[in-house]
Length: 196
Ligand SMILES: [Fe+2]
Ligand SMILES: [Fe+2]
Image (spheres, rainbow, N blue to C red):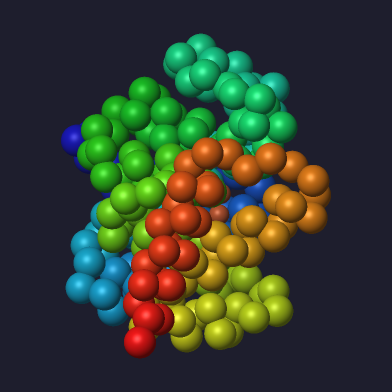
């Protein structure tokens, strides 16, 4: 894997992102490292993926669409209608093709940080959850979500995906397949775990 210093990656992010998103990236890096330490995960890769997860977030949607399509990502109707999740695909492709990062787990953690998927690795879960509980987040219920995340990544994933589901439904948009597959997996785990 190509070696980058944190300093270099921060410089790159500062060039590619607005100040708010840059700050968010640093906060997600921090949250991901903390969650990895708490759950005995790989804090270095968690921090790396957390830092870079939104690297394409501020790119223009038309560039994101071009970038995905030019790398052979097929945009289904569901994807076409949800441009806010495109940056996770772009980010993963950008890491792979523009930064020559070949660590498949890091690439997947960035790729699925908006949608989730069934069968997520611990690193993918950590980055997904870190994005929701980072210091800069202040939505109602975030403190409870932080408490849950310290205790159980599965439970935190369930809460995050439930929230995604509600938001998508509120806006009358379709849910991409990988999100409902992820939701079904975590809700199943929760329901089985709750059985007497
Ligand atoms: Fe994101
Ligand atoms: Fe983010």
